Image 1 (tube, rainbow, N blue to C red):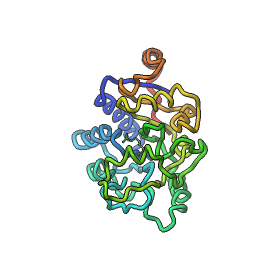
Image 2: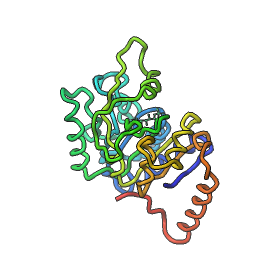
Image 3: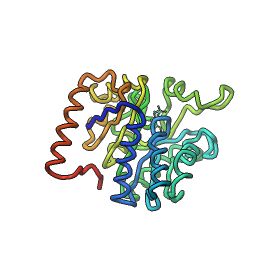
Image 4: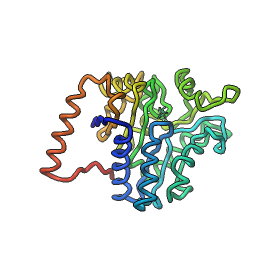
Length: 269
Ligand code: F6R
């Protein structure tokens, strides 16, 4: 794992946008996995700005979102489809038919997962997956104890996730307790992964993900198995890491190596 620690959320957003931009520029038809939630908002704002100001084009890109609630229509203000349309898709030149979000209103939600896996496979697999992390260590909606070998399927949300997300629903409104999510194996199959986290409330999950044991109890720790994952975090989210100084040193040594030898080969494919 490459661990990059930033002084603030804005510089973290800029760096993550640099990485996504390099991917899209190198391979305009890249397949990008996307997350919802507050964490990637800075990244999406940056990508929109770069599209508007510098013509960064998403015309040929394909996207697959990590997850969607079961039981609310795509048009619902809290659906992840609505979130993506509002915060990214409607503001860039992506072809809507190239954007996939699991269908949370399928008559049979149990059939959605295998079909979603097939679509990812037919698209050639995910080149770059963007992730956030839950306060309980979930990635996508793979809650603690999710199988590290799981694929896209229906998951029951934990009380903690339901409470974390209750801020988006009115108290008298139906709040989903099930979601369809890419599995941990689906995520690990991505060729390149960027996980973003900021804020003190993520510090425990970030510590367990990077320095804890590999365990289904902290699903994000599965990223320890992935060859090309970059963790971008701010100081608050990094505050409980034991080896902060080492990660900085690794970065410096890496920069020196790349200066001497060849440019970064982080782009996937
Ligand atoms: C969202 C998702 C979740 C979030 C996580 C963090 O598509 O898959 O895993 O990334 O719950 O949410 P925020 O960013 O709102 O703290």
